[in-house]
Length: 184
Length: 257
Image (cartoon, rainbow over all chains, first blue to last red; front, side, top):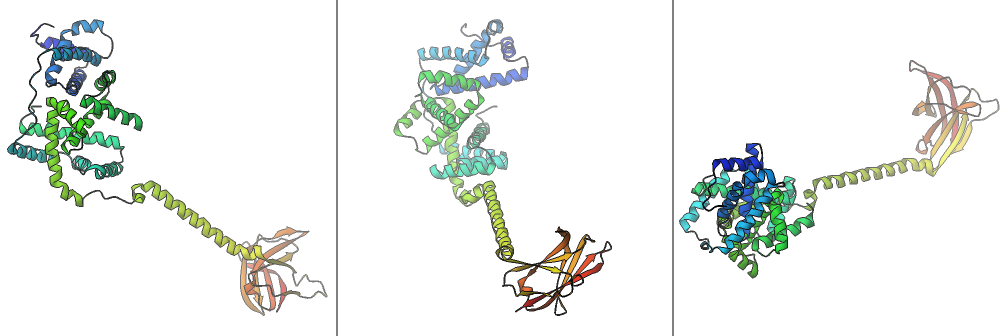
């Protein structure tokens, strides 16, 4: 890929078309791949996973015209292969500065706390109770509480775990929007 | 996904997030992350759990160092750590409130209501069966234990010279099966009234006749408690279609002391 290659609307449209003839479905798949690539780069200890993901998506978009006729298989795995290449190149580059360890001041902590309270209020009562009860307590008490909660809801423990995780991540996004950190 | 496979994958995801998973396993895991939603969601849940363990000092020394040097490097994970801190603070702040509302440890019985109900029902049925069998045994014991039988011929049919049937008083808790012979079975249903010394004692109905050696018999089972010493008369009536009794004959029996 040429340096400073910019993703054009045409390339982006071609990329979506390659993912699915249905644009809405294609957009959904694009977002899924993007989010999961960010997770992979994060898990690999990359400081800037979003930047690496964007670079990966752009590179795939730049080749999509060829891909439409030459590639067969799961598109996500092609993104993965390109992502590996991007990752290896990033290791050869000078590492970006490591982000300062998470430190927040008390005023910001206060704002986050208030935003969390507000975001919890926006959840349904069931979700609010679930996420609080799931993450309450320590060690043995937590295990027992989760077991009873799963039985009360009539779902498997792992299903409860995933449900609690989804609510928690929704709260995270909500808190960041509340703080103005997340435009989505 | 079975329990053991899930447990193994959970371990792998934790190693992956701390940067200690073998490269050979890592590629396979990452491809599954991209293509399998369930694995991706497991990863998100494992991230949260790792963050919580770190924030509550539940990670061992080595994992703690890996967490800080590898996991916490990315902006994405730092967002989770910051949120985790806020969430932990919130949970601590409401912990006293939720203590009183906590899901109390229920007795094992009520945690498995279906099983508990089944056990209760089974015990109930067993108790009923036992009670019924005891009852049956008691009611049948006098019959099974000791049943005396006597065949009576109708007084009107008694040949000249024959005397009233005599019987020693039966022991207590016995039943006297009194067989009343009739020449013909003219009715569908019969009634037998028992008298002692001219006084009514009890009524047996409805009764049906059974063939026996060229004639018919009607059997009345009389509890020995009703048979003190004295002269007894069994008055036999056939029940007409209209329901009114029609006297057919009477049978005499003397119970000796």
